[in-house]
Amino acid sequence: MKAVILAGGLGTRLRPLTYTVPKPLIPLVGKPLIVRMIESLPQSVDTVILAVSYMREALEDHFRVQPCGRKVIIVNEPSPMGTGGAIKNVAHHLDETFIAMNGDCISSLDLREMVKRHRECGGIGTIALWQVEDPSAFGVVQLDRNERIIDFQEKPKREEARSDLINAGYYVFEPEILDYIGKGQVSIEREVFPRVLGYGLFGHRFTGHWMDCGTRETFLAAQAKVLELESPPPPSQEGCCFLSPSLVRSANIRSATVGPNACIEAGAVIGEGAEVSGSLVMRGACLGPGCSVRGSIIGPNYKVGKDEKVEDSVLANR
Ligand code: GDD
Ligand code: MG
Image (cartoon, rainbow, N blue to C red; front, side, top):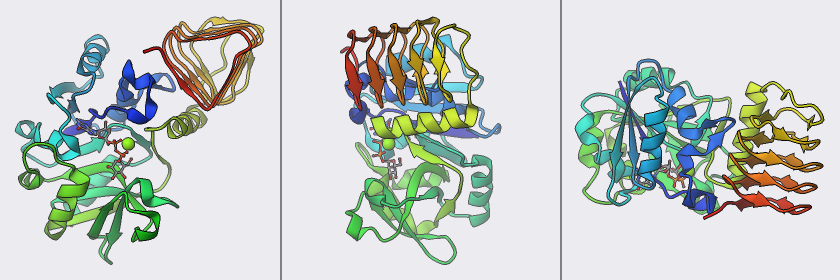
């Protein structure tokens, strides 16, 4: 079976970090987001097609150096073609039931079970659904008694949303869906889903956890969730006050307080007396002595000054 991962967005909500690191390669508790997504695919998926455009070279370089155990085909779009256009652009690879997914979510969804459910329903597509309080930032679906989707609204105003069930960004499709995606830039959510409702588009609800990692807040919430689930072992450095759950992959930490919910990537330097919590500090970043970093993402090689206070920010070199 094949899976298409949509990984070509610009990651605008994580700028300036995403000027130099594409969203799929941001480390989520020690592993690039895209690698976590590939690992969540069922064993039956032997080929992963990455639909990319923005910063394609960085993704190519990554998989060249660190293969992921499955065949990865990276397909470039000369310019971003939208979520539907990106799937259409890889149509020549798709001739049987396939998985498609947004490249920026993590969840407890069991895709194997979802594929089984899709085959039982017999529709053109199945969308994983997650329940939220405020659906206005998402695709909102309305179901009938048989879990068939009868309405799809992309990012409606909160008062206009017809349910609290949202598109979790994981799909199982029959190749016929490709016939309903036009040429050029196409949004699957806005243009294709409303058009194929009559051909059997089904919802698949699941429980556990689900998070879109597209903003600083949601990325760091996802990091906290993964840290809670994986609880990495404490580092061996002496003098570092380590508050779990956290991940420390750097040896350059001097009597600093790290955690809870902090990830320090390899090669980062944390100065004496610094405090880091609820944050991601990427490779080679340098936190000056006495500084404090909370709720923030510090990009590769970025320097935070002595005694500087950083809160709720994304800081990165351009
Ligand atoms: N290849 C390619 N080309 N990928 C793209 C393009 C494109 O032109 N545009 C977006 N993507 C990728 C992004 O990289 C991301 O992984 C995924 O498609 C979804 O795009 P986002 O920009 O993150 O969309 P969103 O989060 O606002 O909304 C989407 O996800 C929600 C769940 O997180 C929609 O699918 C909503 O309906 C859904 O609820
Ligand atoms: Mg998103």
